[in-house]
Length: 84
Image (cartoon, rainbow, N blue to C red; front, top):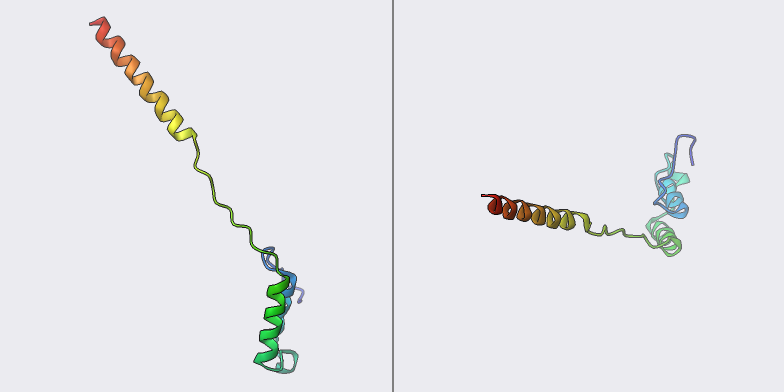
């Protein structure tokens, strides 16, 4: 890793190392061939943790507030009718 490189927290250190090796400036510092690169990627994929997918839950507040507003509006209409 270089002094200016900050790895992304969602990328495993193994995958980060593989990508940085593939992007080296000097050809001699890179993987010798595509087979070695592919093997390194496969090894990094095996050790990488499975991503956590967050599916947001629908809020129950919106229907609740809407229901309360309907009840209040209904009561207002009934009381207005009763007064007139």
